Length: 170
Image 1 (cartoon, one colour):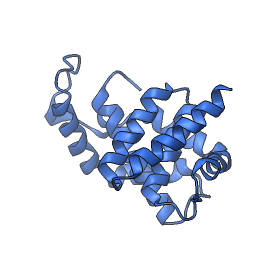
Image 2 (cartoon, helix red, strand yellow; image 1 turned 45 degrees about the vertical axis):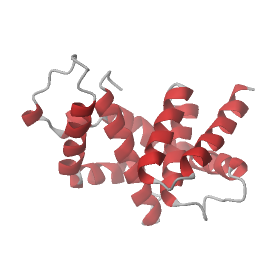
Image 3 (cartoon, one colour; image 1 turned 135 degrees about the horizontal axis):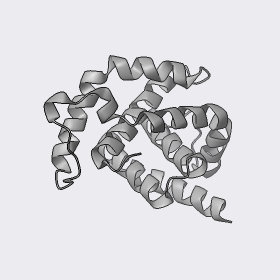
Image 4 (cartoon, one colour; image 1 turned 180 degrees about the vertical axis):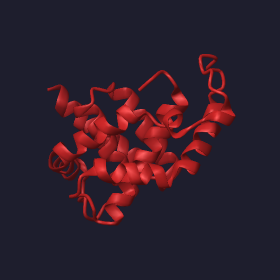
């Protein structure tokens, strides 16, 4: 992703919403690249509004020279990240689910809250298959959980991701 924090956060947030929608609609076996384009296009207005909010929140970043009135979907979402993410999930879905089942004590991917599951899948994918720094991916996952999940989820998600990172470093 480019060095635009608002774009990074917006992209991750909407990929979480996309993964949630895929799970709820039971389309996880389909090609995500085909589904994601439709999802982004049908949510463009919301994505751009969220990006504008985050741009304002992170306005200390003087490197951003985009006129807020001229923002398009390509400014708000990192399409390279989206494509890489969808390819990695398509290729590694079974292993990601296996790791979640392994470390989610008393939970399985079938019983787990779908938002928690979506956040976990994104972060595990980033850590294992997209070479994003562990700390950044885990911190972003916990921040998403604080916004979209119940009070216990951030700790739950952090614990699972920490166990996966520890296993991966061995």
